[in-house]
Amino acid sequence: MRQIVLDTETTGLEPEAGHRIIEIGCVELLDRRLTGKTYHQYINPEREIDAGAMEVHGITNEFVADKPAFLTIADEFLAFIDGAELIIHNAPFDVGFIDHEVRLGGLSWGRVSDHCAVVDTLVMARRLHPGRRNNLDALCARYFVDNTQRELHGALLDAEILADVFLAMTSGQTALALGGQQQGGNTDEGENIRPLDRERAPLPIIPANQVELEAHQQFLALLDKKSNGQCLWPVND
Image (cartoon, rainbow, N blue to C red; front, side, top):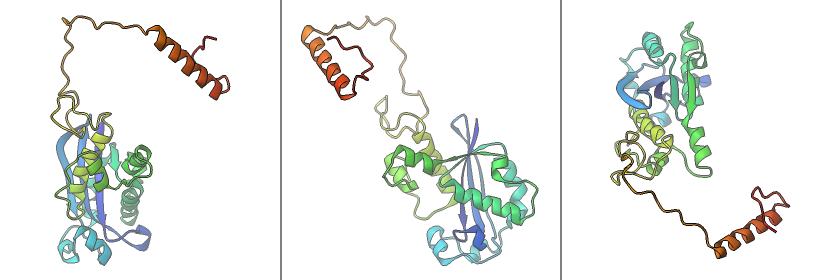
């Protein structure tokens, strides 16, 4: 499976208000492993950057003045993501901006959804951690992902951090290190698992005693009463 973890920075919040992409950062995963292959590009948005957006990512109008327009880099970027599953935090924002840029350029490529499946890690995080903060910094703290370099938002840095968060969120093991060496679940899967010792004597089977059996039946009877006779386990009268 080829997955692309993607992030963008923009001149503002709404493409419908004429805002544009100024930075794209992508990180490639193959079969849930980082390949080291990335795509990173600053873009001249051909308009001013809002002051509020500039405070978030630190990218200035002067910095992007000599960068290529989206239309210039579109073929390379779209070829990089084509056919991949995109991993994006708050996906409607980034996908909306990419679709907007494609429309503005009059490109025949179509919409992102025509070429890529999209996984929204914000939706995933809200499902896993309802009622808690689920922005990228909060997830880094929760999954022990180092984000100490993230003083400002940056598309490539955020994509790299999100890749680690995504792998931790979907690893099935986030707080237990089998070898006692690491926390966070963002290590290579299985690297700390020891092979089964087939020479070891079988573990003893200790049956429940009469007191434990009676306590078990009493608990089942209570469950059966509370569920109006819907207990799935047999209750001995």
